[in-house]
Amino acid sequence: ETGVTQTPRHLVMGMTNKKSLKCEQHLGHNAMYWYKQSAKKPLELMFVYNFKEQTENNSVPSRFSPECPNSSHLFLHLHTLQPEDSALYLCASSPVIATVEETQYFGPGTRLLVL
Amino acid sequence: GQQVMQIPQYQHVQEGEDFTTYCNSSTTLSNIQWYKQRPGGHPVFLIQLVKSGEVKKQKRLTFQFGEAKKNSSLHITATQTTDVGTYFCAGRGGSNYKLTFGKGTLLTVNP
Image 1: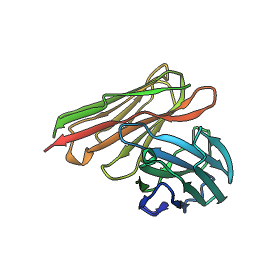
Image 2: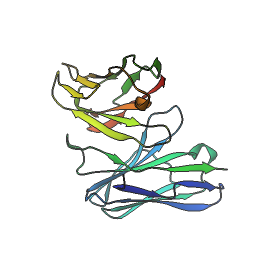
Image 3: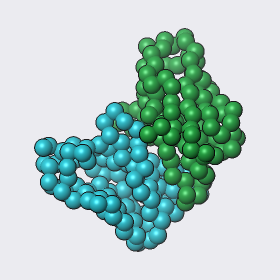
């Protein structure tokens, strides 16, 4: 499946580093999402963008900074992360938002390890 | 806020046995979706249920949406090793209409 791509697939960073995760969708969708998936926890929705505008920020710490330059691209800028931020970060897109037609298409994820 | 509970958390079966996972919401849902995540993979959309009492089938998988639209189930008949993975439900409802995922049920199948 190549509808939603994410880079890098794996990332190891120190707590003082700055890095960015990239997501691109080739499905013509208007909504994009960042999720965090940790072991033994449900998928945690972090941010939602609809037509490039942020519509949800679920109390995410400011060390995570999203950017959506257009409907096809989504970034997650990381700085001064903590070890507990180590997780799989999943990007998703959907045709529309907050309707019964909101089916989410996930990317392969970036597995992040913070040392 | 809205909560979506899913049970069991883990299920191990012998190949050929049936499997069921249940999803319960604290609020009435407008729709519920099911996803499957293979080990090392990402969630993949399986199906969406919208109507009260709706039942949908995909080969050996049967999905149900409760009459009160607060619960749902996924039943797999005669499991195969290819069914291994974590099955998530995700319900939309509540005052803010958010899509909330359950914790998932990890299914392992012994050949």
